[in-house]
Length: 215
Image 1 (cartoon, helix red, strand yellow):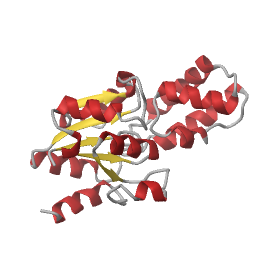
Image 2 (image 1 turned 120 degrees about the vertical axis):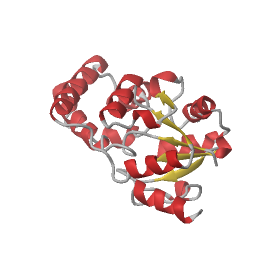
Image 3 (image 1 turned 30 degrees about the horizontal axis):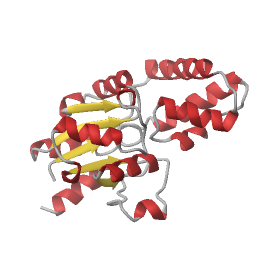
Image 4 (image 1 turned 135 degrees about the vertical axis):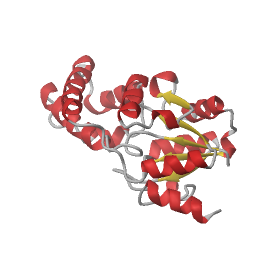
């Protein structure tokens, strides 16, 4: 194995819970009620995929207003608080860099927000490539984003671990031919996912310790 590709939301950063709050806020502004539950339905999906799922759930809704209210809440939140880093992230990244692995991010979030969070958490310099949701046509669970991340690293998928927390992300990595490692956040694995993932692990520090044990 020569590389690791990291998801971002829910894996590196505790951002999915904040997004639940943002969609509760946006849903009430839109008049559909608290909509934070939609986060569970869209985990790992890019913006266009989220729009499709919102249409399936609510029918005709004001998409422009949804994202305006979402941004309004998130901007207010992150003006007060820095992004919350998940336990073990710095330890794992330091270990992987020391061992000479190539590293990439494959996040369904748009590129500007990914870069902002990585920079805010002081981890951008660890990654050789960043592939975001607005850089691929098909969202997770399709394999496109992982295939592009592996290509950017110059490493075949079969030589790459993929760190994920969501069902869509794990399926995407698996379908690309990577070896998925699961660190759960909001979603807990089902039998299908457990049949092909390594883990689940309690946190990223446990992933590092598992790698050390394999030396």
